[in-house]
Length: 461
Image (cartoon, rainbow, N blue to C red; front, side, top):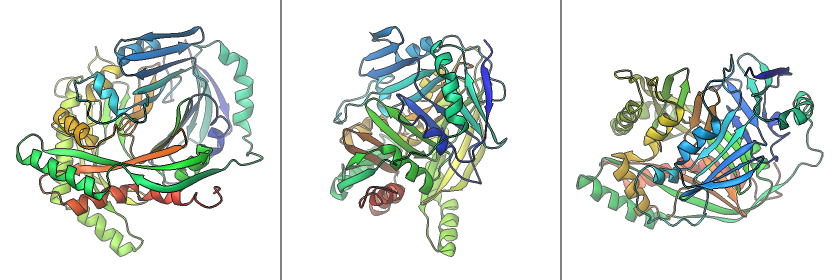
């Protein structure tokens, strides 16, 4: 079936467009960031999916227009079945309908046998994905906006003209909603607890259990009001090419991720792991010196290579033999509060494999686990104390045409039952220093701490 496509006026900042449906059920905004100099080209906005899949433990609830049912099947297989055969063409657009949602870090428990030491105190689904018939695609390179429909859901016709009107002339909210942070920010791993885990990881490394473990802490604060207000402030202050907003029945996700996990386009695969971080400075000379030191840091380069090798192995499970390549190593990328080292790994997907095979074979991303991967995940579960939930999973799309693009869920806040959570971590290796690694987690969380601090007075931005 040929997608229905309608041209609409272009707006340089898609936030005003996303605001028109941000409070709709299962609203999703894949946001490449409001910047004149962009790393991302496309923004994708969608809402009101005609089917949803929500995985909790061993069961997935599948809802569609006809009702709901539960399945104990593999969530990746269930999602493939919900999408149907990959065949629909999507000319000149990244997405013309399909799956949008998140795959939480703990979905890895459905792939590997992992311990259950960390407490599941938030009780979040391991996967929450909608199947969407329509989406708004904003192309910032071509300065075009198009409303598309895959024609899979009859209900789209009933709201098509409303969507055209909403996105043609977006109106500001007459009474802007408020958001407020309440009380102090707490950590799941204050310094003493972090130190104990760090020392345990060092023993595991010396004993030969692992080479690197990504070790993280969770920050939490009470909140009230409309989380969309907080997301608008986040995307303005902390621009990132793989940002996202999700309005789900059980929580809201506010993501400002700088990291791509997996992109699949016409059979070509790319992943771009981040390993190596340095805090930015307001002093231009000091900032340039920090970037220079990061680029020449033997420790950070070694960490990066470990994860590149891990991802080369993960990609090879579904790649055409001898197609895995590393075209770029240790590329410096700079964001609002930190500099990063980013490498690029590419491959060609085997003809008899698809996006779900690729995602399952690489999940969760090696840059946020460690090496070897399974042993690192076992140590993470033992030492972090609480389950990661959405953090270190991925958010993105898998289209009806079989293409995919996903991020790594870092620099991300979740709002659930009046509590806002966010995480920060880093890779621990044999020559890591306790104070430096702990400070790195604070540097990575600096923008999110500042965001919360800005909502402590009257609750408005």
